[in-house]
Length: 114
Image (cartoon, rainbow, N blue to C red):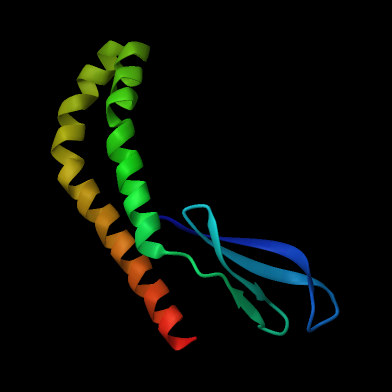
């Protein structure tokens, strides 16, 4: 799961002017928009677990086609990198799960406090 922050100039209803805003995305879904001047935040409810399961499903479902594409593009590069990728996969999986767990926990805590 990926959390992204983006800066944009938007019209703020409280400031009555175009001001810088911070937009927070989780997996390309907007979760909040915050005015940097007055700190007014608009939160958008996102089913965080649905996003998580959707991401896992897409990664698993598309894996065979991604591997096929990689070895068709350059078989020798694919075969030389394969042992390293297999050995590092548990580490990468744990890193992704910890990152997702952190984002889910952060989102749930924000949701409870609002």
